[in-house]
Image 1 (cartoon, rainbow, N blue to C red):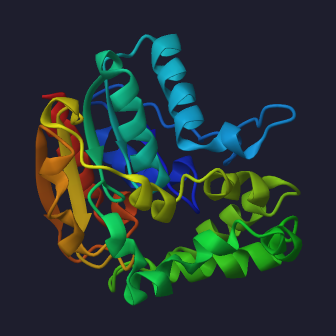
Image 2 (cartoon, rainbow, N blue to C red):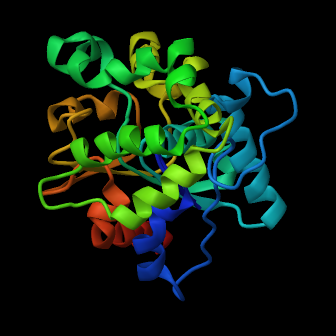
Amino acid sequence: MLLHGWPGDRNDHREVVARLSGRCRIVVPDLRGFGESQAPSGALPADFAAEAQARSVLALVEELGMGPAVLAGYDIGSRIAQVAAGARPDLVRALVVAPPLPGIGERVLTPDAHREFWYQAFHRLDLAEELLDGSPAAVRAYLAHFWSHWSGPGFQPDPAELDRLAAAYGRAGAFVASINWYRAGSGAIARSLAERVPAPADRLGVPTTVLWPEHDPLFPRAWSDRLEQFLSDVELRPLDGAGHFAPLEAPDAFAAAIADRLA
């Protein structure tokens, strides 16, 4: 099961799907509040948080009878996969994830980090909704910034894909649904400041492959130094040349890591 990031949807994994097609069963959902998913009636921000998203993912694994499954993702998809694996390791065979990962800690408060993570505080303001929600043109300009700034030097976001995302995120209520992730306290800053190093017996035990990009401005590769304090069975693979959008920028490596875990 392939889990997308923000600001994206299930199409984030289109290149990975092309490389795995015919080799395994692949499920690529829109997470709750994204793409063509249905938001629950009267939903609150907590209904879009990591724990609620993980419950939905695990319910889908059970409904489709596909467990134990490999969960793969980046950005919010990575966080959701990790929460799901911790809650139901019996349904998760392995993880293949790109940042965010645990171990960042208070490094997220450094001046360099603050220059990148400003959007998470902005998303908690009503102003974000007033400026962006329901305006495809404003949403497109906003999303284009992240897709350009967070990607590696060799990646150019597809203008047609940005148009498609802007149409989806620009529907009334759609942008707010997507940023409820941050309003519920699931963003990297809140997560990093709340984390505590677990006892060895309490570390996440699901076999995990971590794919860490070279050019992700949000999560420098130096922040991969504490993975073994949180994950008991982890393999770190560098993604040289890639930025934040690992499934699109390094689909060969992403698909290969999944295939290795399936094997």
